[in-house]
Length: 62
Image (tube, rainbow, N blue to C red):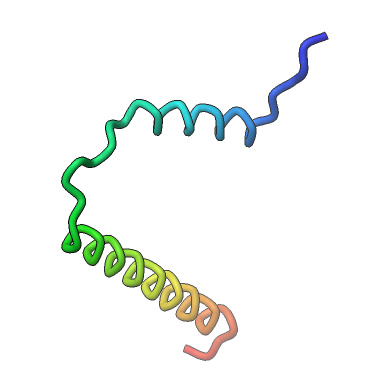
């Protein structure tokens, strides 16, 4: 009997296959690294801001 693939396992396998098809960046310099770091920091801060706004609205503080 063949093992069943659960959805998270199948999704992870498909994701890894897609990542293997993308060619690696050949010209990755300091500017690219800083842009990636800045984008990550802004995304995390934005997520925290939205989460705090939602929590305050839900508790009736706004």
